Image (cartoon, rainbow, N blue to C red):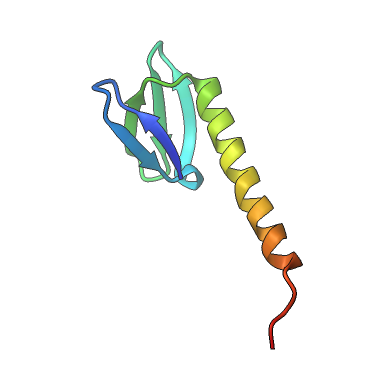
Length: 72
C-alpha cells in the first residue's frame, strides 16, 4: 500500500494494485478499478515513484524470504 495525501491534508493508504490510472487535471486524480476516484496532493510522477518503490520492496522481501535457510 502507498500513502497519499488528500487536499484536506488527510493521509490515506491505498492499494496500488487497484489503481487503474492517474491523471493531472490539474489536480491529481487517482481512479481505481472499482470506479472510485480520489484527488490527492502528490503529482502523477510522485504516485508512480511510490508504486515503484512499494513493488521493489515487495520483491526484495520475497527474495530475502527465499534465501533464508529452511528450518526442520
